[in-house]
Image (cartoon, rainbow, N blue to C red; front, side, top):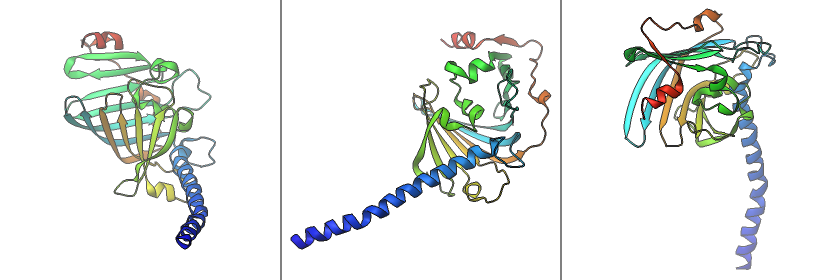
Length: 257
């Protein structure tokens, strides 16, 4: 028994350094994965082709937990990041267009955010700064406005499992401030982008899984990124078609009560 006790003690002691090294390596890898996501959007990263704009195709699979309903939609998203010296607009400007099964679009010119629903002849108009910054920052996709510094607004760790079936790394982000629309984010980060060497910028984001406080989930799968095409600011202007009812977010919510 003494021998067994000594042997177990020896094994535990022998494996302690290995465990410690493994944990340290895990921390280094986590930092590397986060850097592969944030780095290309940092204008001071030293990369000659830091991402200033991008276009990407998406498929969105949504599930409403309480109803057991699932929906699938697809479309294209366009983002343009402004210089840090531009203080009057909320960056990035974006155009999020659903094409299937119904046409809808969300457009921000940095001052206003429009959500256009053609089939209802309605458009919801909100203030960009109120929607994406400050204490009222409750938009689930607002993390894209801070994609170069996610740790400022989120606690970042590994998801479980740590990698998906394609080997992409999975990060779990928890908002530092509670939001009624966002409980957690799980971001899928390209393994190839993490392993990329050299100074060339790469678009690392592959999937976005949003979960709200009710357990509803939306999985966005991104594909075919097109980077730095010089998208003009005019692409993010929106004029409601004639006959469109323009509502505030409060008026829109009241209509469903």
